[in-house]
Length: 448
Image (cartoon, rainbow, N blue to C red):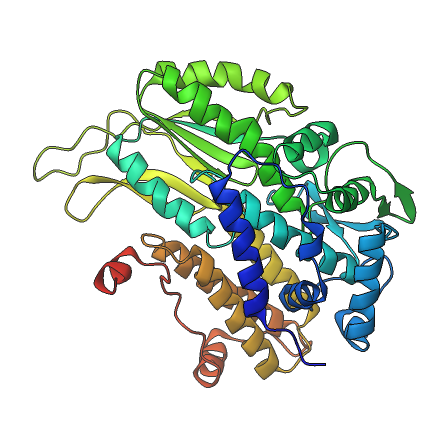
């Protein structure tokens, strides 16, 4: 039997999307027939093969050894309702400050495939409903798109007042009953809803013990980002656009990426009014604001310096962080105030700590192998943080990476450290690429 064509699956999903777009108030009651063996094959193709294993220890290669039989068995259990969602293996990863941790769930590989298939069908519906202010974990949208759209908003409004919002432990506190109500508005297929309920109720394996939380959806689950977007679409996006914006005196723009979002206001009074009602709105749905990460920033543009002078502003403008970047006002080469972005301090520190741990762990591997891996890490860092105006921070990362590598190589033996002149000769043989801006607005303007 040949591998099904992805184009057939794409056509099938496109039909669902067209129907959802034509009938925005309709609730779909028959969707499970779209999940067939062809869709499962495509879901398997889209599922990462190098991810961590779940509670069963099965790898992608193990599953692919008898792929056709495994997928057919999965489909039969899904359609008959006998599929059992296995517990999610939870691991803790350090956050940016190095003191706190973030829980990440690791589903089994088979569970990822089924979650991917259900997500593909639901995305065809909800992508027609989601608003343009939402960017996180959506096909065809990215963090760089959010940053690109935020820049002209802050420039056009002269900065204004920025409400930086962080929802405390959103993925742990997502209320299941409210989520079911939101799903009822667009999707009432019994087979799909039963599968989603099983994933919400699946236990969490941590330190050898299985617990069953009453709220939340595991970070790391394939379907979790979509469920989060459905939840916040109703709680935040629609509420702000339909109930809040019409009541404001000035302009306001919302940009949300998953559970982190900012609102840019032209009026301080509007900003403080929204900050006052936002906790009440989130509280109705079992959510709360993070008291330290949620703040109102005076981000108004500083007064322009006199002609021919680069004087310091009388009022030091505020800064805010979004998607790993610190946004701040800086002078352009022509002496005008512009919004600039640079790598946030906690993200830079975390990235360097990861490099340091990696070099310590692999210091006795061949130098050629280490060099190839470090080149990939540097290019990966630049691929995300390499945006216009952030070149200096990229070079800071590159220089510290080289220092960490030299320090690690110096500890390979007790015969003394690697001198800088010797390390420079090593870099001639194993050159480290330049830290370049990848996401350049100037390059895009020259090559539209």
